[in-house]
Each structure stands twice: as C-alpha cells, then as structure tokens.
Length: 105
Ligand SMILES: [Zn+2]
Image (cartoon, rainbow, N blue to C red; front, side, top):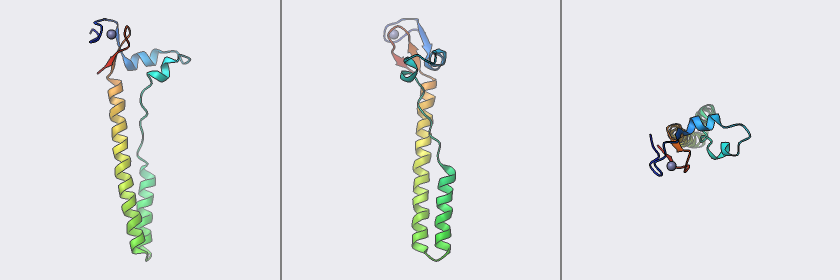
C-alpha cells in the first residue's frame, strides 16, 4: 500500500505504530486512540427506579418527571457511547504515512 498523498510505500497502521512507540515519546499523545465513554447504566437505572419509587409514594408528577429525565439521560449517554466507539473503530482502521504523516482510513 502506498500513501495517497506522497506515494511513499512507508505506511503503517496507526494503531500498530502507536503501540510500538516508547512510553516517553511525545508522539504517544498525538497518535493516541480516542477515549471510549461507557454509558453510566447503573446510575441511569437508579435514577429511573428512584423516579418510579417517588411516583409510587405519592409525588406522582415529581416521580414521572425524574423517570422521564432518567430516560432522556440514558438515551443521550448511549448515543455518546456509540459515537465514541465509532471514533475508536475509525482510529483502529486508520493508516499512517511515516514519510508525510498523512492519515487516512
Ligand atoms: Zn505520505
């Protein structure tokens, strides 16, 4: 495979290049994989159950409001987790040109 920018054959998979870098290399931060965020499933479930419990004990509107907020929070957190996993997958399939530092997938 050759670089699409400079046609150099000196190309490596970005993840392999990054893993082979020494720990003290300043390039480690530059080429590091994007962080993957986890959906806070237990916190969301706790808030949801808390809302149901509040509604059950008499404060129906408050309880439903808390439960609805927990559902919205859960949907947003799952969306963020999926997006961060997609960025990580793209990083894992990215190629790096060692001549001109161009990156592509
Ligand atoms: Zn190149």
